[in-house]
Amino acid sequence: MRFTRAMALIAMFVATASALALPAIRSEFTKRYKSPSAGAQAKAGCALCHVGNTLKRNAYGADLEKALKASGSSRVTAAVFAKIEKLDSDRDGTKNGVECTKGTLPGDPKSK
Ligand SMILES: [Ca+2]
Image 1 (cartoon, rainbow, N blue to C red):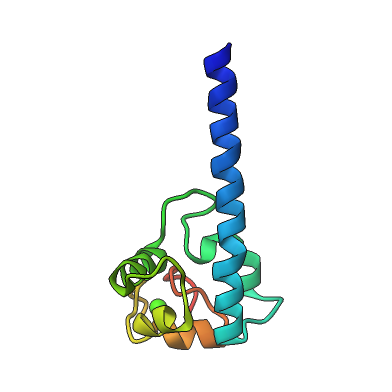
Image 2 (cartoon, rainbow, N blue to C red; image 1 turned 120 degrees about the vertical axis):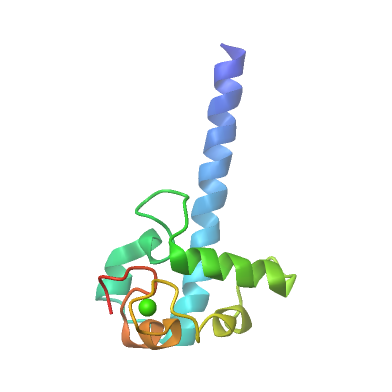
C-alpha cells in the first residue's frame, strides 16, 4: 500500500512538472513566431513537439531537444528555436522556420 501511494505521488509530481514545463516552451514559441491562437498549432497542443499526447517527441521535438542540449541551457529560448529553423524536421519540403511562422506543424509531414 505504501509503495502504491509513493508511486502515485511520484506520478503526480512528474505530471505536474511536465504540465508546468509546457507553457514555458509554448509561450516562448508563441512569442517568437507570433503563433495564432487558432489554427493547426493551437489545435495540436502538445503534438506540436510530441507524438500525440505521449512524452515521445516527434521529429521537430527531437531536433528541438538536440538543439537545447547543444545550447547547454535548460531553457528553450529564441536562440534554440533559431538553431533548427533551417532544418526540415518532418521532411515535407518546408523548413521548420517557415512552418512555425505560417502556422503549420513542423513535426507533421501532413501539415505544410
Ligand atoms: Ca517541414
